[in-house]
Length: 171
Image (cartoon, rainbow, N blue to C red):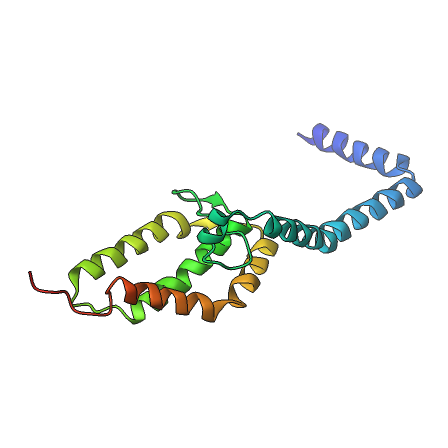
């Protein structure tokens, strides 16, 4: 055991003596450059890609995003998935929509409550446990928050159109 420790000390000393200080400096410059690129330029590049995606949205994509000018996609069912921006937007929009629909829900209407609980179950199966890039989450939050009132209003209108705000009719 003592001999192994001596060999490790010798190896560490050998490497310290042999590494060129200029080479170490070049490595540090490269690490700093890559870090700056990842922190500053990546969000800019992703924003440009988002703009391109907005232009390429189909009518179906616009319907899925409730007419908002960004792409929204449903995350897969399951836990621990890594979500992209479109999927994060869906999760954030569903939170707003469910809160809006719940605010006008008549709890005496069992059919409406059942339908609302199906929405909650769908949300929980897709958006209750996920992972994501922090920069993507921030961007998705910014996108969705800027349309918070529109999302809330359309969800309330949808709930009212389905009769969730009224008591159930007797057969």
